Image 1 (cartoon, rainbow, N blue to C red):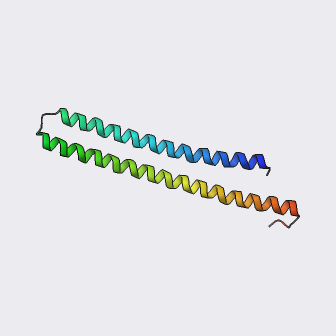
Image 2 (cartoon, helix red, strand yellow):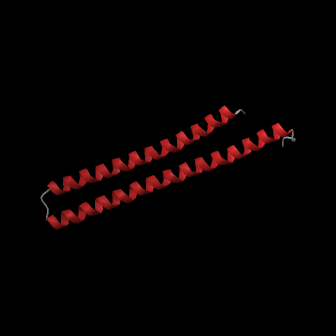
Image 3 (cartoon, rainbow, N blue to C red):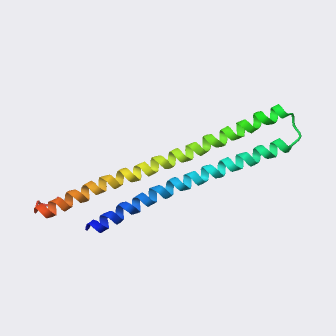
Length: 106
């Protein structure tokens, strides 16, 4: 495997990890937007204002928790992808060194 292939492989892995994080951020933003829309709908309904505020805060809190879980899961997934990329790079580097030095391949 040549250096260009290694670089390309690592870049592909990094792009995949960033895409995963971006998708999670997008989902989190959608969740928060829906929660705000729901809170606005509730606010426009004829209910006692204290009850409305309490319900709005509960909805927003729940949405933030869900969004944070999604982002956390995606960050863990991206971290695993990066870790695996590092392990692969180590193996590839070892193989290249063995080839250059003439050591026996395992």
